[in-house]
Amino acid sequence: MSPIPKTAPFAEEEINLLNRVVGPATAVQRAWLAGFLAGLDASQTGGVVLPVAPARPAEPITIVYASESGNCEKLAGDLAKAARKNGLKPTLIDMADLDLAQLDAAKRLVFIAATWGEGEPPARAVRAYGELMGEGAPRLDGVEFGVLALGDTAYAEFCAIGRRIDERLAALGGKRVVERADCDLDFAAPAAAWIGDALKVLTPPDADRGRVIEVDFGKPAAAPNTDIVEAEISEHVNLNSSRSNKETIHLALAFDGAAPAYEPGDSLDLYAENDPAYVDELLKFAGLAGDDKLRAELIKTRDVTTLSLKTVETYVAQTGHQYVKALLADGQAKDWIAGRQLIDLIANFQIALTADHLRALTRPLAPRAYSIASSRREVGDEAHLLISAVRYETHGRARKGVASNYVAERLKRGGRVRVKLKPNKHFGLPAADKDIIMVGPGTGVAPFRAFVQERRATAAKGRSWLFFGDRQFTHDFLYQLDWQEALKDGALTRMDVAFSRDTPEKIYVQHKIWEKRRDLIEWLDGGANFYVCGDAKNMAKDVRAALVRAYAEVKALSPEAAEAAVASLERDKRYLQDTY
Ligand SMILES: Cc1cc2nc3c(=O)[nH]c(=O)nc-3n(C[C@H](O)[C@H](O)[C@H](O)COP(=O)(O)OP(=O)(O)OC[C@H]3O[C@@H](n4cnc5c(N)ncnc54)[C@H](O)[C@@H]3O)c2cc1C
Ligand SMILES: Cc1cc2nc3c(=O)[nH]c(=O)nc-3n(C[C@H](O)[C@H](O)[C@H](O)COP(=O)(O)O)c2cc1C
Image 1 (tube, rainbow, N blue to C red):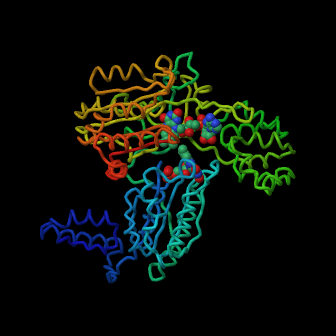
Image 2: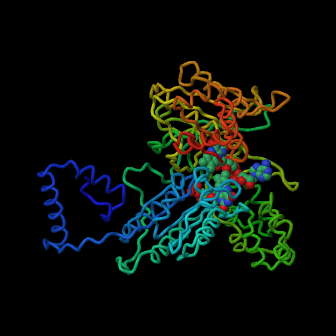
């Protein structure tokens, strides 16, 4: 029997750890530990041994997070830590692992949820989210709850998932004791404030009330460095040929000291600057050309491209512009902003603006994430990125993605850039003897270069199979030489490619998956992990659908059974996605 009871005022994982130590300890070891702890208390209270308060079971709080790139997961951990300090006993659940029956027993419930795609749940949370919204969801009568939503005002469906979960918990009978907060990309301060407020309400009156609730955002001692660091650009190479209509930059970053301790599957957040030409045009339309201080501030620190409903509302509040006011009042603003940027609003509805008006129309410039395309075991204190320049035209204006064009057009070899490690523990390599199947068209191939380098450096025994795709073999075969080498030295066992514009009918990676379905299912039956990285809008869905069809055909399963086979891979964390 475990000596530390589940009611002890520790988190579940801490109770497990204590049991691992105390459980097998000898009588002598236990006596030593008891004496040691008593002595420790005495030394901290000036030699006076304080009377021990009668043990009271800590009140539970269930914290569920729906996260893809880790922000909600981090906040949920912060909340759990603060709850524990407040005398509560938190249970932390990744929505990917949520069994709705766990909510039955909940007394206090917090959801911290991100929105992805176009108003969709994070990929890992899709199953549990569907169940929560479905008929089988349990009643939550009287359960005290609160929801913290993370999102991005640039998306039409801002914080949609948090909003829907909030509505659903109330519809299931839950008692909303703290109003939902919808946070934009600069969520740190509002999220910390919400956590503080939520804990004040969710902490029962007989637990240490009145204590100042500290939200400790420090990182655990053993965590890798996730501070912003500078690196020098040691390589800047366009991997597309000059005849391609794409530009994909291989960027090698050399750190001044040790590289942040990244693992294959992690990303770097890159801090870009805006295009000075765009900012000059914006200032001209705003009647603020010549304000050099504002220009520098906008280039370096403000998001000057995003146009959201919130921006339009701010514009009306500041200027009282009649046409824009009418757009909002008629409900046309949502359609009008689609495909447009801040510059369109200011150019189309010109009115004299002050520098402060313009500041208020922008939010802080957020970094952009890029998958790391290298393994430290192969490249040392460097990190490689693969960045595709985003360029398109809408409403008669040529548009350029902020960060990708900063990299493609303005960063040069020898220049410097600021980055921050964004670990992703949900997209790592399995044990070295396990097979891996990697599906990564376009820049989706980046983390798989890290996987293959790592497998080579560790002489991993497991086989690896890569599906890659892009437009044309001759012009767009990203890292072609690396793959050829890896196939030769065995770091890569197999590779299948799909070049969509080389043949009259378009061939994509999902077609290759279908073509190779027998071998693929054999690998999966043998325990292989299946990884997908890259485009979330179409590719990831098409790949999943192709795999479901492959199961149905190869194993003669009904569509429902084939779907269940893929769902079970997801549940077992053998179907892993990092899509954007
Ligand atoms: C975890 C993660 C890993 C990533 N890894 C990589 C990677 O390895 N390589 C990589 O290149 N990218 C990667 N990305 C994407 C990257 O973070 C950026 O989103 C991308 O580079 C665009 O950023 P930007 O600043 O250049 O464009 P932004 O200024 O952010 O503009 C992009 C926006 O422009 C609009 N847009 C784009 N194309 C069109 C179009 N055709 N029509 C209309 N509107 C359009 C969309 O609203 C889009 O959101 C990753 C993203 C995530 C979340
Ligand atoms: C590809 C992509 C799609 C997104 N779609 C939405 C969206 O539809 N609505 C929204 O409010 N936020 C959207 N976001 C913003 C995320 O919700 C936001 O970055 C959040 O902080 C991510 O939290 P997480 O790290 O816990 O996943 C999107 C972000 C990305 C990268």
